[in-house]
Image 1: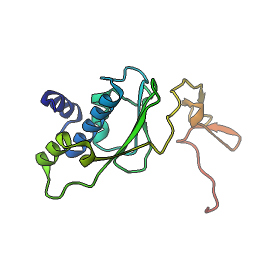
Image 2: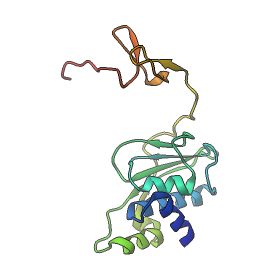
Image 3: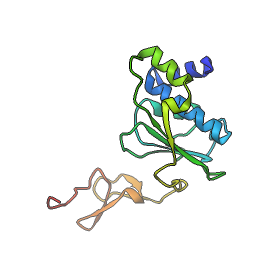
Length: 174
């Protein structure tokens, strides 16, 4: 593991931790498997199943971001990352294995960054399909607050077009 890359990822994230190490290691595996340094557009997509520290490692190392549309949050709560290479159709999923007994702090970080991949992650095929490419959507104005939002985030309520903040869900307990 290149210590400069690790330190730059720590600087980006704000602190050194095992979660960041898992994200950095996952991103570096995607670089290796897909033969790419950084995703400049949407060549590589990461669907993260968590919103924890490791996601910053993915962003910093691989260049997947919410803004480009190639970092997508799929909230299962699992410490798993799904990677897709749009150029080749290759894909894989990394699920963090249970933490090694007795390893804490820097020892755990060093283990994550240097151990054989199969000791750190379970490797499998993604359980989801490659997401569609990002696209521009028409913005609609909320009839309640007047703010605009993309059409796929608007709802109808009482005959009005409303944003998610103004929408009140109606259900009868089921």
